[in-house]
Amino acid sequence: MTPRPNAPLLPTAWATIGPFFPQTFFRDGDNDLTRLTPDAPPTAQGAPMWLTGRVLQEGGGPCVNAVLEAWQADAAGRFRHPRDPDWRLADPGFHFWGRAWTDAEGRFAFRTVIPGGYRDAAGPRAPHINLAIIGSGIMGRLATTVFLPGFAEAHAVDPVLAALPAALRPLLVAAEDGAGPDGAPRFALDLLLRGDPARETPFFED
Image (tube, rainbow, N blue to C red):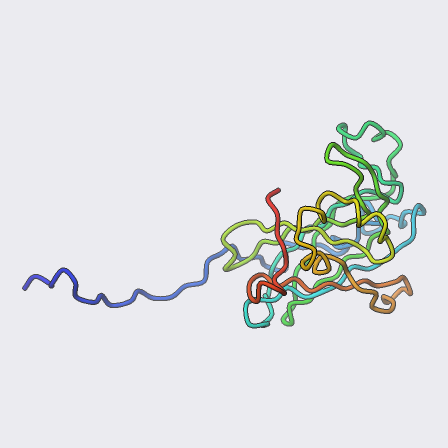
């Protein structure tokens, strides 16, 4: 018997989209940008800090086992990259890049230094840390930028913040959150992947 053209079809099985990352994907110290290797001394340049937060799904549930990558300028606003005209002066003990993953509560943590501001082709950039997120159920790599409190004048002229509606700009500014385990100041920002447009984290093409 031939099925009717408009007859409802049985749903297929539901499955989570990968990728999946085992704990062996990470090494001790991957989330510490202040060291070139886990056993290296931390950089002496700049003020140490922690960036922490949670990655949240729609509805506020945790996004478990998501991978976050962070990259930023050093304390003087330089990158160890040939496109930076002062790259030879970049901090030789700073890693510039790190990787963390979320736990069962969606929490992540990076140890780094307070980045310096700099000027690029878009204009003067306020001190910031770039983040990318990948994980199961996320269809593509998500990229955003985290700004730090205490730089209001720099925020006012930063081209990335200026590209956002004024009401959304505070969603990218971390809040002071006490101190980390080593006494360095801690800044926290939760990342909402999807949900209330007034609370959803702005993401950018990278």
